[in-house]
Image 1 (cartoon, rainbow, N blue to C red):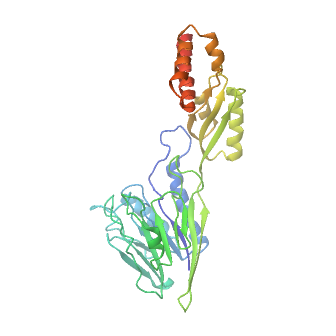
Image 2 (image 1 turned 90 degrees about the vertical axis):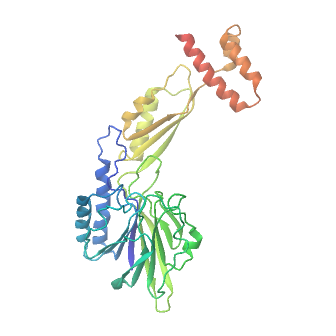
Image 3 (image 1 turned 30 degrees about the vertical axis):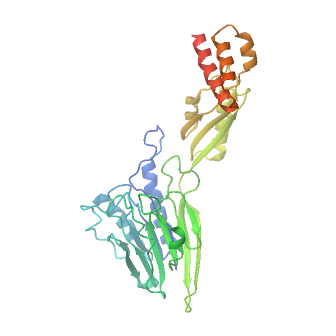
Length: 356
């Protein structure tokens, strides 16, 4: 039996909604999800597991109909879904009375339940969130009941407000595979347990590859199980961080040119955080706003300090406020790092005042 495990799709989310990019990120989230369904059909995957937060909020009826139509195009794949903390099943949720296709199953109970897929000799255990926050460690006492079947736990959580999980205990609970959701970073925690991560990265903190887990489970007549899992990168775009070293020779034009080449080489379709580091010529004022024109730049962080010669500045300004400031800072602390920062920021402010 083979499967694809996804989670935290967050259909309806609109990342980077405050940018001027000509990118419809909300549409891309749908498109990537539909590509997963297409992959299931092309590869005739046995089981698609969705470990919570398929939607970013309570799903609209028309949204469920669109998704159900896509599931209905699957000729071989069974689909099992749980609701997570974002799309939890509220009292008037459209999840409650919705009629899914025959190949699609949604956990609606708030306590542990199971769905037996006879054709696959597979039992999937799980439940859905019925409130946004669940503080109880509900998976720590989960167990499977029929050893002869392939047993899978579908789970969503992993922090204090959203079902704390004792991973070692759950991994040893007898399940052949534990499909986790809620943590957006993909991570294989054990040979039989993984977070698939969010299908598309949803904000600038979600650096690196995003996609799904592909796995196979085989159980022989002696109840010996062989499980293989691997992470498959699948997202349209990824967030990347560029640490750019600024020196005394750096100018605005050289910085723009070099960073532009880096963005081109690393993929213009991706989204970037740029961190400027180092020491600049005090005469050069870095134009960080211009860097947003290089492409999909979500943030520019300027950590650069002017490369002042404080001994020379002190000698030239002994009789004024600048000289007095340098002398006072150097004598008031033994912390070299603190002295350096205080000198850089203080002198910058004093020189700017002097220029005015």
